[in-house]
Image (cartoon, rainbow, N blue to C red; front, side, top):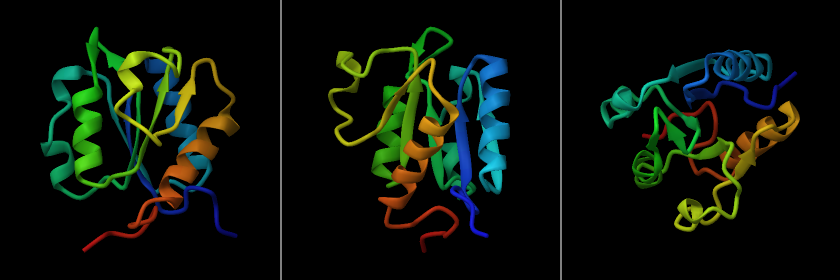
Length: 133
C-alpha cells in the first residue's frame, strides 16, 4: 500500500527539538524515506541541496532568531516543493512573496501538516520519491 509521503526525502528546518522529533517520526510513519533536520540557521545553505538528497522541505520561517525566507527562495529557484510550519500567522508580510506555498500554523494537527506536504509534493514536476534529471 502506497503511503502519503512514499519515498520522499524531507529537509526539516526546525529549531525546537521536540517538534522536530515529532515531525520526523510523522514523516517516516507516512512513508518518507529520509528526514534531514537542520536546527541551526548557520547550517542553512545551498550545500545542503547539492547532494540531491532532498526532494521536499518543511520550513519554520524563523529559526535561531533569523528569518529563513532567503533559503525558501533558494528552494523555489531549485523547484524543490516545500511548506512552512510556523508559529507566525499566514497573513504575516514575510509570506507575501511565497504565493501558493502552504503555511501550516502552529499548533497544527498532524494530518494538516502531512496533507499540506503531500499537496506540495503532488504539485511538483519531480514528485516525491522521484529524482529529477
